[in-house]
Image (cartoon, rainbow, N blue to C red; front, side, top):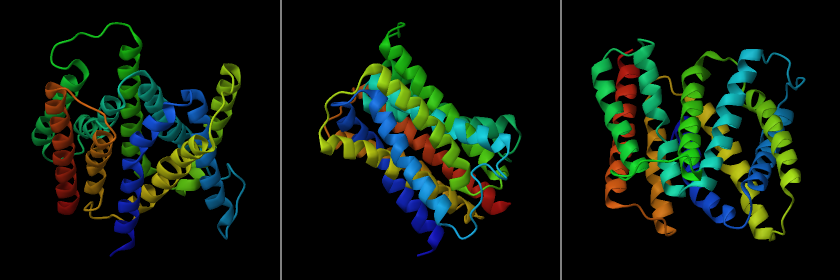
Length: 289
């Protein structure tokens, strides 16, 4: 099996465990401490990768402002907003909304005129957005300015950040660990202050290890594996696998006891199906190119 494919499968496996692990850890810890543990784990992974290479360089040498901003949006923005959503609403719904980022990428490609079949891509994306609307409203309710409303807004913001990262990362010639380490350090500093202000609750070793796993696994190794896999994916045939992540994560959440209404379940099918359709069209486009 080719190395890029193995890396992509490893990233997807890690990402699929993100939501279900977050559900368990957030049951015992406030989101501020979970995020602090997460950025701690990610910082350790990125720092180890940075300082274990033969060609060591100062942290910010060769990393321009554009790359730093991309890392802050793509890593720190995506994960902070995603976890605020997890803490504010049902995790299974937050997870589905956050994984509409491939649909937002499709919309971006249409706006940037970087796709040969914009109508097909637009239909796929619109079907997914319709599914997201069903997940959010259940087909009937209107959202008020409550915690749930802000949770959905955070999930949408997370999807926007990841879509931006995906659209822009191909134009940045910086090693993934060098791009992501400064962003993880910023996230660690901010969430550490947030945790101290809120106060540190008593926590079991198991829960603390779960928080560190979220950072070292889905955030740290997941981002690294995926970034490296995409650099070895000239044909685009591996990128399609990324759109399978909501299937694995949703299945694990259902197994852990999360439920969707019938209408929201239809929306989930639309979101996941549309992500797959978008991925197939992206693979086809790159293959023709």
